Image 1 (cartoon, one colour):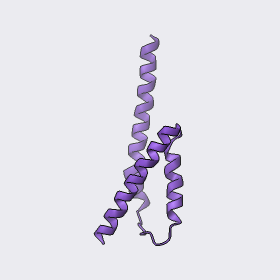
Image 2 (cartoon, one colour):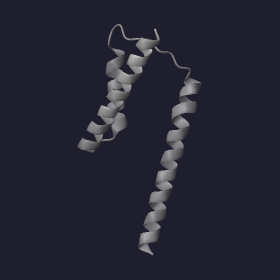
Image 3 (tube, helix red, strand yellow):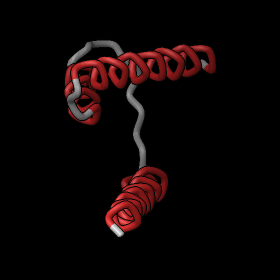
Image 4 (cartoon, one colour):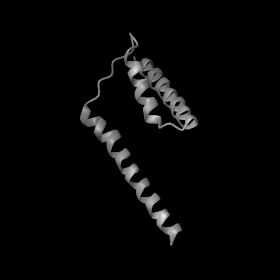
Length: 85
């Protein structure tokens, strides 16, 4: 059973890596590719069903992405102010 999850996790990580690279190459936001891949993945029969508590998703994914985005936007604005002065 552990091997099934390990294989699934490694496969998903490789798929995410590939989708991010394709998104960067095409200059399209990679979350679009990840959402489409997730939707397509949900239609594959026989794949393991993993249930995650919604609160856990917010704790793991939402907060770090929000903090990262706010920091990046702050630093971009700060660097623009530095170069215009």
